[in-house]
Image (tube, rainbow, N blue to C red; front, side, top):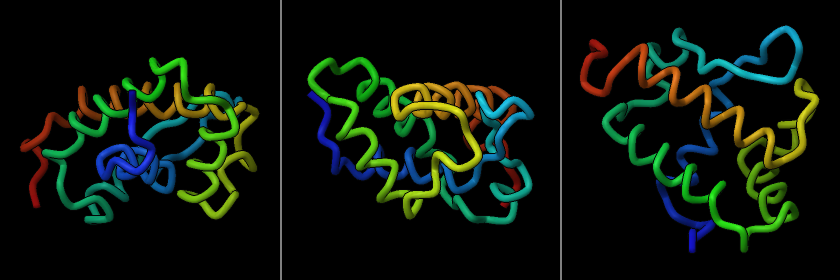
Length: 112
């Protein structure tokens, strides 16, 4: 069971503030320029964030309302403006974007 107040999960969800939507509004990409600018200082935490996000999405006891609340708190209720996704699909897109970012920039490879 995932704790919704887990610091790494909250950090993972906070990455929505560093993501850009794709043209269709159904996917996202973590913005390299914002990450490089230091808006997310500890890239060694990214694999743990991904693990927590995977745990959240795999937990059948977490309902859509809880996911929506988590996203609302992280984004000031603006998470759905640029995306045509529900809460679970949005978090799936974030997970995919985080996986892609980690592949492009393995933790520890970024120059600080």
